[in-house]
Length: 414
Ligand SMILES: Cc1ncc(COP(=O)(O)O)c(C=O)c1O
Image (cartoon, helix red, strand yellow):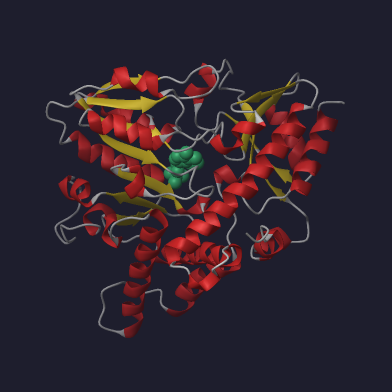
């Protein structure tokens, strides 16, 4: 297996070469885009910023671009067919669309299980259904920051309609065994809604293998512009009542998309997947001989391995800092159970002060509650002040970690 081509990766991202050596450690809030993504967006806007469905060439090119993007995202997720992919603004609005649609089809299954570990987008939206008679069951997080399947089982019954769950925590970086979640939920006759937003830049997704029912993702976390997409099993999507107007065809995916979305960003999403395939070419011994799916799997495997190195080094270096409290999985032997997203606090220094000091040194991290206030409360952290989060992706380096930790050492007055 060739080494991880970090130089090629970094060369692909213009934002990493603006001359100020800025360290992007806030990727959980949004990642940078490769030049090819920018080119695709620009090409769309410069040559064919027109509506779909016309009889002229440029309009037909827009149709073809969207179709190709659906095929690319379908391959990325291993969906059964491109029409299971709907494009839209972001993950949150898709969760809202699906939740409101489900509210109309609850009948005698009114139970929805939500997780304390999730981003509020995948919690508050389901809680809002209580006014439709939904009964919420909480899958509580353990104090060590894990979700235990033994705690899920007793929450499920013949009354459970859905389990809403994240694939990876955007605060702690821990990966959830969502295949096992789907297995338990289906045994009770319930559906599973997965939030893949934080997990998607870090590892491969196979919706058929996971056997989930819905999955939502944001393009801007996976090296594309701001947009979101929803995948659902065809029968599940077909059964959903939606809010489409009469002029929108009553078929998937249009009935879910409810009108026009940002075509140039969808063109960028397609290019982001091509970028990952290019990475797959470089790291796979078979290169171009592989199928598109195989190239993507090679890319995501290489990313997982490289990021395990980053996680291990980040945790090792941080754990040596005076007065640090690290949250979530820390043992190097469990590196495969997490992505390189690490939350911490420094004794005596407010998270906002840590983030501001780092910002003044050209290092971007995030402070606050990470939109996961319930997770913070469970860990005994006041959500108002919160934590500092460093969230890395595959274009980050060991040198950047070194710079980051050196700055933290100064902030901690070591
Ligand atoms: C895990 C997770 N879920 C959902 C969201 C919301 O995504 P969007 O901004 O696309 O609505 C985020 C955003 O940061 C997230 O990290």
